[in-house]
Length: 301
Image (tube, rainbow, N blue to C red):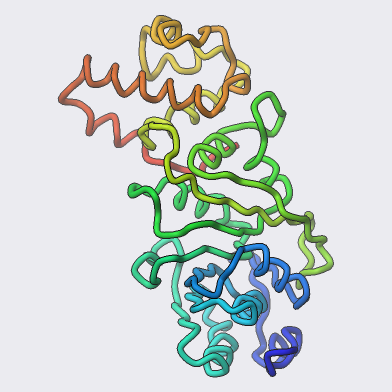
């Protein structure tokens, strides 16, 4: 290793680290691949980087080797912490290790702008974290871009265009606020232990001015539309607005249209129309509606 630290396989053995299925862990050991991920994240020399689930630190070391100004690594597995502390000692003041759950830790409070998120996300929380980052209440967010690893199937859902089989709720939410693209795939044998699926690295550049839409309403519209994707919109969206057919017609969307036929812009238009309908018909009941529109990755597609 060029950083003077032992190979990741040796680190794993030395510290008795074992990948935990409950945490969705699969460790990436190939330094060439981790360096490739770090390089595709962009110029890191003037950026802080948030890394989720660093494990024994393979990608962490690549980010530092590629010149990241500072890495904030959030790790839930306490058995990985000694290995990460070894890296922190090797790179004084450039690595901060935070024990804990990334779904709870507010990473925005730990970094200086500009910042990026780069991570080999644990499979069991990857989609949920992505949705939470995309649906941030404050926009633009603290991060400029995200370079993340997912199962190949999830990656293709993120970038899918309307009319494609993979196009769904995740596609709309991701493309609403980001420009996502798949960078490259990584085979199972590159990991310890090897997963049963191929992985893919996705780069998401934030949109500074996405289409106007209320995030909670957009999340609800897409949940209903794709939850019954074979139904026409006048049926699937009826729980939102009783006269949904009339509302859709007023914004130029045929009520007989199905969810996969719409563009991201169309979903934003529907969300704005629903919001306007709520203002006109239930001006004092917005809080009750919003409780049903909290973004969730449950059943996301």
